[in-house]
Image (cartoon, rainbow, N blue to C red; front, side, top):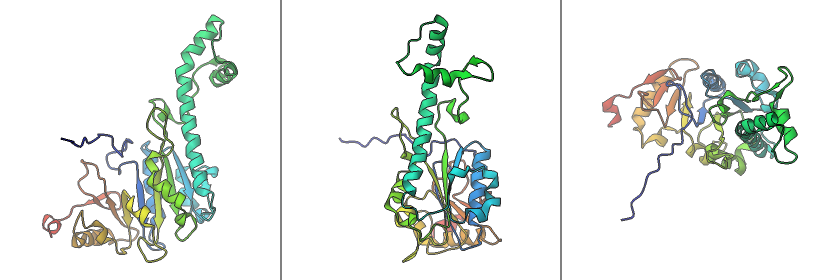
Length: 300
């Protein structure tokens, strides 16, 4: 009999604090203007950074400068801010950043593997290294400050246990721009955890955090490809979303959870479609308060 073998490889392999959603992540944050989408996104990104689950954050937003105070704690590099979502080359530029991170990770791994051989060669006086490579090794290992050879400090401490960096992409105020109608962008979203694979297996990947005002509409809404690849939602305004969760809970249950979650200013319903086993519910008010659906409501 041709039996199906279920592989154990998980889509959520990044270690995160018990109270935080799993990673990888394709999070959609939906709400009207002024509802707190940027506040929600930057706070979640901050919590990932504070718990060592985020190394680098890239931002695409034409309104970044107006949200500088929110972004301050995220320590975003100047070269990681893209303020023109109509730039057709933007998806490729993002891929190039991920490419560079993969190459840097592989370079450090190579330096670790070669370190003992190079040190033995230096001590013996016979440098057995590929022609043209010795200068690169010596420059990498030699410290001017300490005047000695040693392994260089990794770009991210995650390199030491042999793990790739964790990269997040926050997209804000980009609905109805060329980026959101670019097929190359859709492809990035679909392949997010497979972006820039390593020859030995695994990939760097890219986490998406997308803030929009419209989730689903005839025109100007979020593309179906992006919606279908969502792992989580933050909702501060309901727009024909309840029907999307008919497999998980009834529309009535969803509406009750939504009403409980949005009864205060800047509060929102967080829906985790891939919650951890130890987490008590897929529904939360903001990120810190679990909402437990009533058993009778679940069976409606």
